Image 1 (cartoon, rainbow, N blue to C red):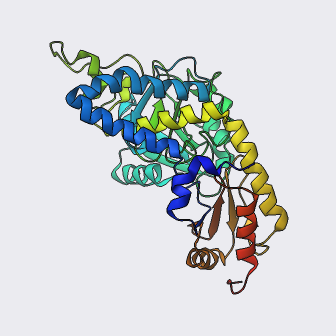
Image 2 (cartoon, rainbow, N blue to C red):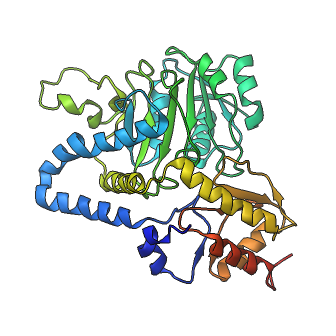
Image 3 (cartoon, rainbow, N blue to C red):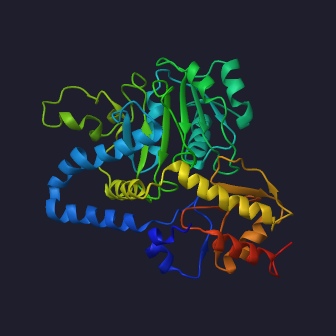
Length: 372
């Protein structure tokens, strides 16, 4: 089955392109165009009063979509930010100890990796990194204040196991457990119902939620980090009209909010979520579609010189080998967009692909000349 009509604008914008980097910049469905226009129309018609609608309608709708997707007990634990780096900084600022001991995997995305290395360099944190498959055992073995790990690693597509064991360690006084779900959210069905009271979960709309930039979110468990040191005026939005005395915080997930942001990403996110529900496209349905396409590619084995290192939960294939950079560059010259991380070629699959697209990619890979 083809879902290309849902992406007619993006596909028509570059009809000769084969875009197999949905794990990087996911093409936007037509519904996002309508959502973006709705944001513009509200700004024009409501001006200053648009924020009343954003906080009373747009944000609650987005919170509801996320709560349903993650099986959270309610939407109030969710805060939004333009990027996940904002949340990394606020979470660490809220930890109740001056120099926290931080454990992370050695394959985290740059927003955490770069910041944590700089904090370790300055003495702000004590940082330990281990391979993902050792992280849970290490967390249980030694006393850490913060454990940070990706649900699915961005570079290799490896999957975190033992999340329930990590959650069992979490306490408001420490340790805290933070799951970076960017490559898990809407890429694989995720149920946090049993651990939502103990773990942080952050992700965003740029990839599998198909909503573009600027719409990242954090689920913050109740009682963990009631007063982040890095804070913005939205963290006490309900109290703006009241007399200010001291620094107040919202009692729910809004305590991790920052300051003024562009809400258009939330409009796009909501519009895409409505479209998916109308079409009956759950994460499980989308994953099954993409899994079929991955299997079609793998069965053809057009890149035998590269080694598959990603796991099944990843929406992309991570193929490692010394010729990966040259193959990536050659594909780009032929109008095929993939992604490269060091010596790992990443090929991502999405709703806007069908079997014909996979066959076209295989044909390009088998054609000469490609570096071998």
